[in-house]
Length: 210
Ligand SMILES: [Zn+2]
Ligand SMILES: [Zn+2]
Image (cartoon, rainbow, N blue to C red; front, side):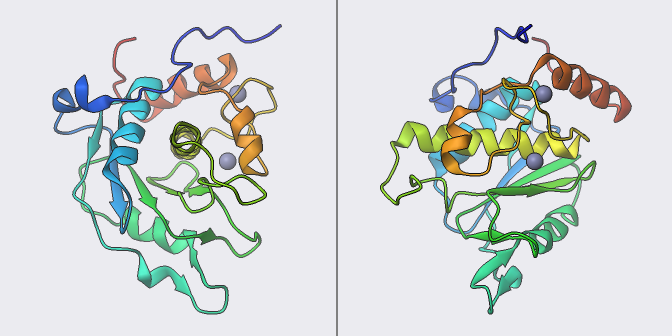
């Protein structure tokens, strides 16, 4: 049986024209760009997180590129150091998502598209590898935005204790490359959806009405 989920299959593209001015001033998720990240992608991520996670999302003032996490030997940025830094941000947001354009790694992997603290506060997404196909040519802007939103959703869901899922139609499936990511749907399967609702209750988080 395939999971039933009829909402939010397409990307919210132009958040500025509908809900960005009505975002609550103290949401559950704060989204922040660290360094050179465009405003359009920031707005699109914030609007889609709000829509699909049903959580109020705020855009936080931009911060500098995370040079403290740069690893000279790997010429990449250590995702865990960025997470630690984000997690230490001043309250009030219970969850915080950083967007970076630098390439991220964790010690056991050559690179990561994103990383999150399991059941913690912070998540980070790198735009670095999402602009291209495996062979190096660029993808359309729509595909790029969609990939960023997918990684953002997946990582923020990890902060609510969601683990990887083996349902074919679920954003929590593991993807090993950018084209894998293109196969993922923009929603959670019914099991992950239920788990997420339970996590909101456990963390005493009020979600937005459907
Ligand atoms: Zn994951
Ligand atoms: Zn799932």
